[in-house]
Length: 240
Ligand SMILES: [Zn+2]
Image (cartoon, rainbow, N blue to C red; front, side, top):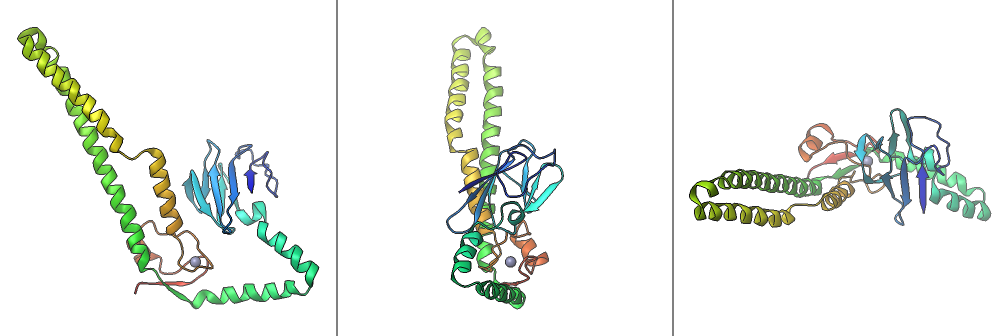
């Protein structure tokens, strides 16, 4: 299922904010109950405070569209699974809705629970190591291309002074440029980078399976130091 959110979108709650695009972002309902948000607007989409191109979200995720519009996904599209579930429950037995309230109270009692976050160390380290590797690769490519460019520029005028030697030097420069151009294929494409970011975002979540909210900390060290509990489900993070 696909929902367009915007001033001309087909979301549940109408949006009139002029800083929101007519079609601002797209929401896919995933089979596992999560949602994929895809930005469609030049004005940008934020999920839980972070600028996204494409990201996984949950019903309690907060979307910021354009300059000032902000709402949770639940407020915008309602709960697609609840409407079908409620329909079934209401047909069966109307008192079941009370059972549902009791369940939600149960889940708020989870605030005392603690979850091991040590697996997130590897998630962060893998992500960060690749980031560093890619930056280093890019730096080498830039350096060699600049160097070869300068070499070729200097070699060309020597044709006038040294004849064949000048031609040879120029040829070396040109071949080097071609070689480094071919080598650029080893660099990460924007698509690969996005896929890697997505995989990280999907793993960088609250360890409580009933929460799964994106973590506030931007790295593992910060998570240990400043974010020892989840602001959404209030569970404690512990490192075993
Ligand atoms: Zn949580």
